[in-house]
Length: 435
Image 1 (tube, rainbow, N blue to C red):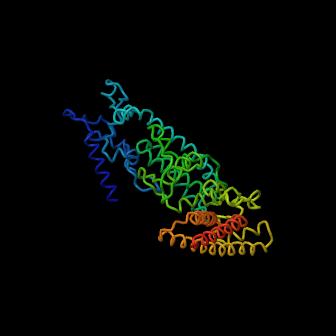
Image 2 (tube, rainbow, N blue to C red):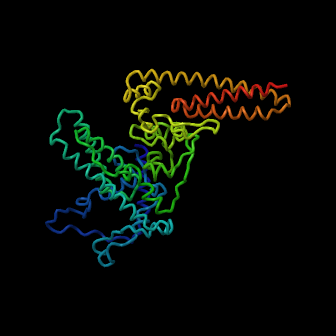
Image 3 (cartoon, rainbow, N blue to C red):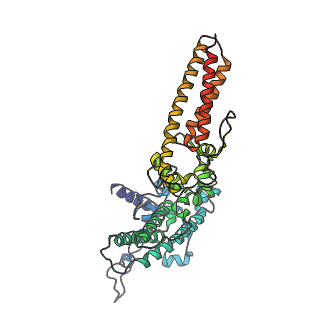
């Protein structure tokens, strides 16, 4: 509330500063005989609350479900008359009925340069498209709601969601969303989500629509493309290099899935955000990220020391055949998936594979460690053993591949690699022990 009061006070200063200097005005005429106006003519008797919706939009307050998001223009104290510079009426008419000034994109260009030409129209069109996408959802929710409120808590929740969504949609339309375009877009995004939530509560299927624009794809459409902002091909997040452009153009991610709608460029994504998409039950594109595991599963990985064959299931079973991300992920959960195709005995096979391969991997790691220690002693004694060093590198490479790709993705291939690693480690140990 304190912040709102300060913003209103600041707006008052801006508007007061925007008022042009006027010559001393003549005394106002008395009201005509029989008129409802008494005393001085008071416009407020007929004209009430002028521009309140627009002011609220510019301040970034008055909508439902989102924090206050003042317009960037308001934050740097841009006055109304900076954008509204085109007279609506000619001078003769204005002398009698007053003057209203219309906005023009030339005001944008005057401050920001030619690259902003067309930006205002893009905002108007994009907000219109967003409202058009949401309109069928609102109509469907209104049609599904009973006329009178009952005691059903699901209906009550749906009614509240629908009312809030409709309010925001109307606020954006009547408050002229271009006065605070990202606040307006955020209100429409919330409304879209609320209506998607309301329809199932009313026993209705969700309205199928391409709503990526409303869900958060509006940033690039409204500003970045017009201003010539180029997206970075890759970004670093949680010490991982991610394909930024591919997330948008290929994977269908929207800007606000990872970035704040309130603060420009701020990253709001967390590891849980990534998992909600990558490890959702709907995602069947596991291999686009887990390429090493995919290659191992399909027999396309491994040192030339071992001839890799595909896992026998690779031709028929995809990643989601074993990994069900709608459940809490664990080895036990993966093992239970076997029963979907095989009989119950196969769950014990899976346990044998995993525990047996874990034991084999640990034994191999110890063998490699012993060989590395022997080579290290020779190196410190200034007795180079290049043959032993080469054998250790090969053993380490084979072991690392199994550890990185998970042996159970290809048990036969893993066993062959681990056996080769142990043989190389033993040969290196013997070579390093020679006098």
